[in-house]
Each structure stands twice: as structure tokens, then as C-alpha cells.
Image (cartoon, rainbow, N blue to C red):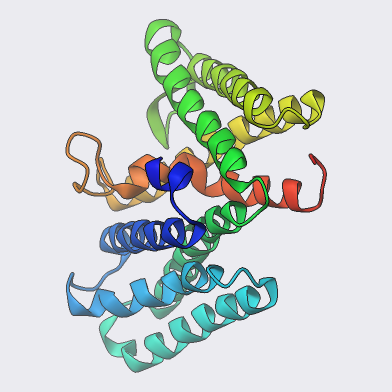
Length: 251
């Protein structure tokens, strides 16, 4: 938060790169059928390309980085075909990782480069933090009906409703303070939509963890799991917010 508010956009970009590298490492460690070590360097590097290129703030070059990620994944699978198990499974996991983590996190950088990027990122943070907090406490107190029992048994419908409500209110309050020129109706609609999407982002990571048979994506953040466990709600929401703002739906 300190880097976001007080630091330059370039420093924020470097922080996001570090987060993406850790997140990709956690993802590939969970999902790939190869030993942890030097062989994970290339999938992580390939998946990080969109975030690395996002610092140039050039959409055309950014699209090229997605192609390079795909091409690098294909070349890697050809090189180590006999050592990666199911090659199609490997290609699918790598391509999804580059999109889910690399592509989505790059949009945090793109938002930061917008004229009011810091304010919009604080709105996004309010959405995800409010949604997570509301879902946890209201779900724990009133949760009865399971939301997705086969994916995340602890999540409830009541918790999801509480998360969307708190996330929307928190984002609207932050938006009114930091973006007074923004239409309150559009701000409310967007905050509500982002709250819903943040739940989807959380469930996507739950699918990966459930498939891998692990409780947390990593242990980097003591008591809070890994990097992915902290940013999962934000991953899918960030591109949505960027495109809504960029096409001037909100501003």
C-alpha cells in the first residue's frame, strides 16, 4: 500500500513482478508433474512475460507477450516432452497459469499507469478486502447453505452475499472520497460487479488447490498461506476494472 500510494508507477511495477513470480512458482509447484527446482524456472519466466512487458504500457507489445508465452510453452514442451508426463496437460496448465496470473496481474500495472490509477487500485483493494472480510465473518456467523461444496466446502451462500454487500459498500465509500467526479451509479454497479467477480477469482484458486490436494498455495506469508492465497480475489477483477475504466464507462 505504501508503494502504491507514495511510490512511482515503475516501483509498483517491480513489486507486481515479484508477486507474479512468487504466485507462478506456487501455482506450478502445485500443478506441474515435474520436480521442484531449476526446471520450474522456465515455466515461471514464460508465465511472467505479460507482467514484464506491462511496464512498457503498450497494448500492442502486451499482446505480443501473450503470444511469446504460448510459443515459449510449446517450445519447452517439445524440449522436455519425455520428462513432463502428459504433454497436453502440461500445455494446458502452463497456458492457464500465464493467463490467470501473468495476464491478470499485468492489469494491476496498467491500472496504475492510468491518470487516476492509484485511486482505482484503492477502490479495487477495497472491493477485494471488503468482500473477503464480509464473506468470512458473515459466513461464519450465519452461513448455512454451501456455495460450492465440491470446490470450497467452507464457503456459503450467506457468506457470499455478505462479501458482495461489504465489498460493494467499501468500494463505493472509497470511490466517493477519491473519485468525486465519478458517477455514483456507475461506481456502485461496478463495485457490485467486481465483488461478484472477486468471489469467482477466489473459487478459481480453490479449484487449483483442490485438484492439487493442498490447503494453501504456499507458506511465504506465515499464517496466511502463499501469495496466491492473498491475491486470488483480485486477479480476475483487475482486468475487468481496467477495461471498464479504459473504455470510459466510468469516467
